[in-house]
Image 1 (spheres, each protein chain N blue to C red):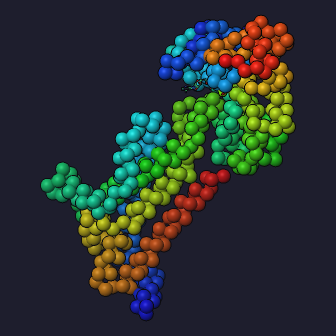
Image 2 (spheres, chains in turn cyan, purple):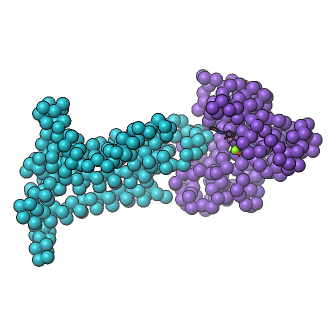
Image 3 (cartoon, rainbow over the protein chains, first blue to last red):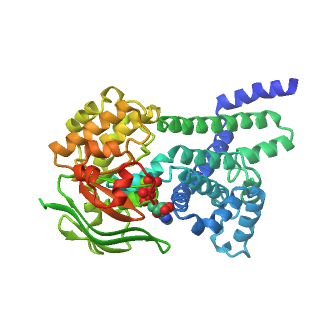
Length: 231
Length: 241
Ligand SMILES: Nc1ncnc2c1ncn2[C@@H]1O[C@H](COP(=O)(O)OP(=O)(O)OP(=O)(O)O)[C@@H](O)[C@H]1O
Ligand SMILES: [Mg+2]
């Protein structure tokens, strides 16, 4: 108990001294997760919306695949990306293994099905008669789709929140494909694993606090957006 | 302006080989108030969807303001001269005013004075900034009516707009629609199950049965000297199929 408390104090000192190694880890974490989430949203929202708008029968198989993708174990995704990017793998020439690019790629594979799948569900949840009503009011196809998406916005934001939650705290995939290399691919989660193993609990706790804080801040921002869209 | 808004000949709509609308001939005059009555499943709502160009007919001819509907018709432009108020008002999760602006925004139009006027007319000026989903059923339908009228349609289609409403809201909606029909010469086609409403509002009334228009007649004649026995039976409140 004592140890945790002392670790906590040390952790605060670490955070407020803005230790350069710490700053680097935090920055890389934010970058990897941010870029992965951004790209997943950019592809996942239109794909999910398109699926949500198509007829039930046509979307059957893809929907099933997406739902499966939503439950993929991150370690398995990491293994898959590792094999693809390894020297003898089909994408070996990219030379991405053990770089942030590989970590972003793995996190996109984890986040994309979450964004697309939950966006699809959100769009399907919009009143089935809304498209007809909107067209009766003179919407063209683009305006119709935009109106439906806007109506589903609370669910779409929830999709992004879920995807963010799925990757921000994820450790298996980034560990495998990033390698937890100091100054290069070490992020908050992999650093916590390492420092816990080596007994550097102060640092581990500091990193844990920051991770929680970041997750909380991001979710609070997204929920604010959701609330503003709610009325 | 054309004397006829719609000229319909041999119009058919089928769903999976089932004929749902089958109208030999129907002319709808500019500025008239046509009421369509008929039992459930007769094809009334389907006819309105065809008139709003929301679905293509399976076969037959629709002339809209003297132009024949076909593959090269400017559908969006036509659709923007017509609008429908449905039985169940579907509003956006947004403020009342944003809902009323919807049709205008699709047309890139602004008409602030018209919006204020219509808000006042449906008695919702004080609610303009309220979230629409907190309104009562009658208020919702008044928003739906306002958002249809604010775009100044040439044709207003109403699909049982007052079916679930209390007398106060029914009266208000009827009054506003009638007013628009008279003052703006908006052509109105109203589908209703309420024959008293048909009598109150229609310049002509038509009976639809199994996809066919059995009789279209001036309101007085429809109710007092119907030419088809089924019309007379329907007016007496008997079940007809
Ligand atoms: N999109 C559709 N696909 C298949 N069948 C349809 C479709 N729309 C309507 N129908 C069928 O067409 C018939 C006529 O329906 P419609 O809604 O036009 O009747 P209605 O006269 O408006 O009835 P109500 O008074 O109950 O509203 C019904 O049997 C209905 O099941
Ligand atoms: Mg109907």
